[in-house]
Image (tube, rainbow, N blue to C red; front, side, top):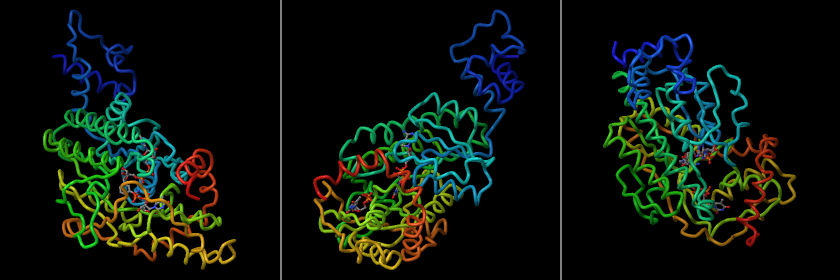
Length: 415
Ligand code: NAD
Ligand code: TYD
């Protein structure tokens, strides 16, 4: 028996327990036949053990989600648990944006598990991959708020660039050791944004998969860097990656530092509605459940190495969004302290480097994967307003402590 066979048989006999134990216990564990006497262990012994075991064990019916306690990740997990059969392991650092309350309805589901941790912690990611053996990674984890990236870009580089790099490296090592048929089936889906493409003029055609990258904020630059790394791992190593670039999402569980939940909460509390600049910046809005469906579609049927642009095909200037929200609140909360709610609109200093217009051309994902948004803006925004009004406990939970400090820092001089 050569060393690799010995290692494999050891790990197989011990089963998965060997993986969850500290690394050297694979061959030190009591009850196992010892390493044959006078064997000189090569420096890459553990790697051989894992490669041999991986070839024997293959992948599990499980997907690893990163950032699953955030806005889109938690919506994705809730949808996944309702509509798919594979198990989910959610790896999330629980930054200010991560909230396990979003996942309360599935927390004790037998197919769901949570692991707190940083995607940049390579030992942790390696252990999780080797032990859990996912057939896919869906990578949501990121710092995601443009205004925060302007105040302090460090975390954006650390998580979005270095964290994605660490995850790619560990994914590559794990994937390289899989049996051939599993290597073919494995998928790494990288969830990205339309903001990597920069800003459009009023008459420019919408962004599409071949638009040149031109990120303008530290957030979009860090996401662009991660997109490039993901692309390179396919081109160089053939890692089976797919990238999605999506427009602005809205819906339940969005942290109220972003435009739509912030305006709903401020308006319902009679607080000013801070509109940046002239309010004519244009965004394309997509209901979050439609984004989650798009990601599941790409995971199931997308072509590896490809990118897919996703959007709601619903461009609107910010002021129109705010006024729409105010009209809905006039209808749903006629007894609020300030009605009509639009009297609360307050124009404030513009965001530095504020991109003027985003728009998405979604013809590729429609043509190749038959994905189309289900929700219209009118139905989605009504559901969203109702959700925030009906989930006071959730709102109270996220708007205490550090949220207050952020609001004071971001809007203090303006409001
Ligand atoms: P979010 O800020 O609500 O959630 C991010 C999650 O990632 C949080 O749960 C946080 O705890 C976790 N996280 C942060 N750093 C981490 C780290 N180092 N290790 C592990 N977990 C970490 O973000 P979101 O709005 O849900 O966005 C999810 C992804 O979708 C991001 O990659 C974002 O760039 C992308 N995206 C967002 C939108 C949007 O409109 N929100 C649109 C397109 C693409
Ligand atoms: P945001 O929700 O932060 O998303 P992004 O910057 O990723 O597009 O902002 C959406 C738009 O709303 C953007 O043009 C900035 C604007 N905005 C305001 O006018 N006021 C606000 O208080 C916020 C948070 C955003």
